[in-house]
Structures are given as C-alpha cells and as structure tokens.
Amino acid sequence: MREVEVKYHVQDREALLVALTARGVEPGPPVVQDDQTYAPTTWSYGDSKTGVPFVRLRTVDGRHTFTLKRPVDNALACDEYETAVTDRGQMHAAILAMGFRPTVRIAKVRRTADLPDGELCVDEVAGLGTFLEVERIVPEGVPGVAVQAELTAFVASLGLAAIRTEETYDSLVRRATFRRQAVVGREQA
Image 1 (cartoon, helix red, strand yellow):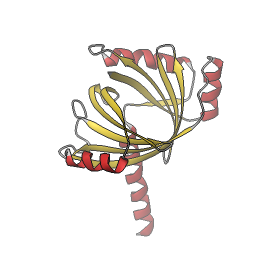
Image 2 (cartoon, one colour):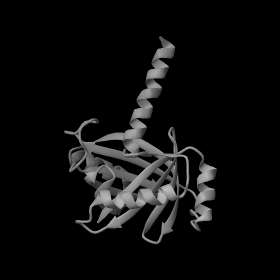
Image 3 (cartoon, one colour):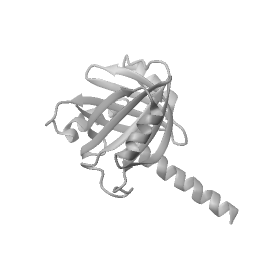
Image 4 (tube, helix red, strand yellow):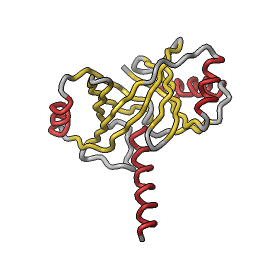
C-alpha cells in the first residue's frame, strides 16, 4: 500500500479541535505511542529519503508494530508495510542485524478520526508541540503530490494558524534535540 500524508504544526490545539468539530470530525480518545525509528547504516540526515527504506518499532498499550516506509514521491508519500510483532526486543535486534541503526525515539499522544477517504491524526509530540496529519492510502501509481494537494486544500478549509512541514517526525525531533543541546552548551560555556 502507499500512504500519502500532509503534516502541519498547529499553533492552537483548541482552535484545531473546534474547527474539526464544526466539520463533524471528532478525534477519538488519546493514545500514547512510543516510536523508535531506524535508518540504513549507509544513510545520513541531509541525504535524500526518496527510495530509501526506513523502519519503525511502535508500542501502544503493550502491543508492538513493525513498519517499513520507503518514500516514493517525497518523505510523506511512501510505500508502507506493517505487521504486529510479539517481542520488541527481538525485533530491535533483527532490525540491527538487517543493517539499520536507531535514529531517534519519538513520544507522542495521538487522537485519530476517520475521514470519508482517509484518516486524520492530532498529535502532541514531546518536545515539538501539536501537529495535524491528514493521510490517505492510495494504490500504486497514484501521484502522491496530487493527493497531497487535495489534503492540503482540506486543511486550508479549516482556517487554522498552521505551518506545513515536509519533514517526518524523526527529522523534526532530531533537529529540536540538537537545538536544545546547542542552547545548553552555550549556557554552560
């Protein structure tokens, strides 16, 4: 399957929830997600993500999921493969043995809502703030950029103060972590 999404940093979470309610969209209850992301040992931040497989181990309520995403059109339009795993530790070891390395850990609280042709996620990402993701699963061959334009139009119709990002959470968390470390380093100097 191919997952295509758009992601926005939202300035006012309450305004977002009000706008969604006005559209008849009610996000479900909050769920804590603990994600460990991995990249191939041959890939570095700053390199293109297109065509490169990335993996994630996610734990929600004691259940673990392994996901592989390979960006096709851009970092947010990916071929995706996902399955449940019973032992996170063993899957972590297998991922390392397959030539991946851990990148960042992402902690977030997610609320989801089904849309007529996709899904919407309201995420509170530790260290980053509130994000809105709107995604759609499309068949192979459907241009991700065209789908992203449709999803962007939906978000624009909500009338929110939101900034679109083309980056994945792992890149955003990594950048925020380095910024915090730089500030602490300057304060200690």
